Image: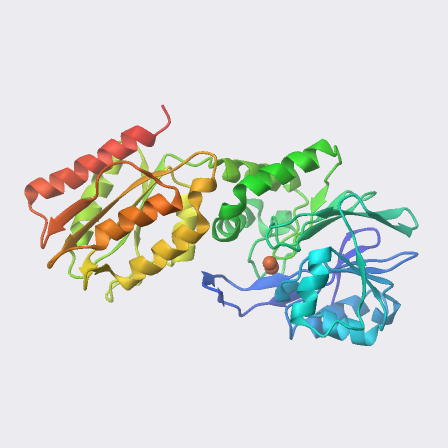
Amino acid sequence: MKATKLAEGVYWVGAIDWNLRDYHGYTLPGTTYNAYLITGEKNVLIDTTYPGFENQMLERIKDVIDPLKIDYVVANHVEMDHSGGLPKITKMLPGVPIYCTQLGVEGFGRHYDTKDWNFHVVKTGDTLPLGGGKTLVFVEAPMLHWPDSMFTYLAEDEILFPNDAFGQHIASSERFDDEFGVDEAMKHAQKFFANLIIPLAPKVLKKLAEVTDLKIGIKMVAPSHGVIWRKNAGGIIQAYADWSHGVSKDKVTIVYDTMHGSTTKMAQAIAEGVMEGGCQVKFCLLKDGRYEGVHRSDVVTDVLDSKAVIVGSSTLQDEYLPTVAGFMSYLRGLKPGRLTQKKKGFAFGSHGGHGGAVKLIDADLKTAGIEIFRDPIEVYYRPDESEIKLCHDAGKAIAEAVKTK
Ligand SMILES: [Fe+2]
Ligand SMILES: [Fe+2]
């Protein structure tokens, strides 16, 4: 197996997980666990892989040096997709110094038997000189995205190793953004941000300001998943700022599920209104047993990219349909209200008995930080002509309210 060179003495030695299709509810076309090797007077391994992928990493390290010649390990993040190789590495290299945050030490201790591990706790600004004109600088990044998270910066080569931040779930033969296609990589980065980073938006903006204040050059951003940003390093950093600010298209995402098609009729009327109002529509049926639905991890990517989100459900046993319940739980957790620019939305749906779904959706939208644009639209059984018009007009009104003037 081959390593990939980023710069003189800097290599990607990670693992490709071609077959992964679901990562705690996030659909993905495979991923990579990126580990990096810096060689010279001192040899450093930055991060490892998910358990079971460490041999792939070791084979790639062997392409450059004997793994027994690793002098230091940097562990930016406790989560197992980046630390799963540590038990094997510490067994191969007893006493190897492991550089991580204090919360990293605690977190590793809850995952592995670390009593013999040689931790070196680092804080923001601490450096590790490697000799031969290479220095590592550590930057704590608590809650980006775990309490233990840390960025590592290779000063002379201006390469940032931010672990999960700026990552994308892609399994590809290409290691760099320009080889894979910058636009395509950005789409995957946006999905990653939508599903993992939205609730952290205020922290992202603070961290970006901190990094800007350091006035350091960043030639390459080498995250722990997906391709390395070498052509678009500035672009992905700017995109994180834009996404955190809630910058989005003149677009409205309509997401719903239906029992017998009444809620679909309402959704279609709303969509027609949105188009007339001058916004693009993203139409997301979650699943109704006849149609293949759009997965919630893709829906939230469109929500991030939209100025409004309209959610509908038929009522089942006084509740929303389970697909919509799952989506709303996911949206509540992501807290899009933490983005600087708030999104607008409202609830709609049909019911037979007492109803109930739209009230639940309305409450969830509020909890998620979506600004309620209007009262929920609730229809008894099938929507009649006037109710279809009501849906249409509501779609048109929200589009006109959110579109760029
Ligand atoms: Fe993580
Ligand atoms: Fe990760």
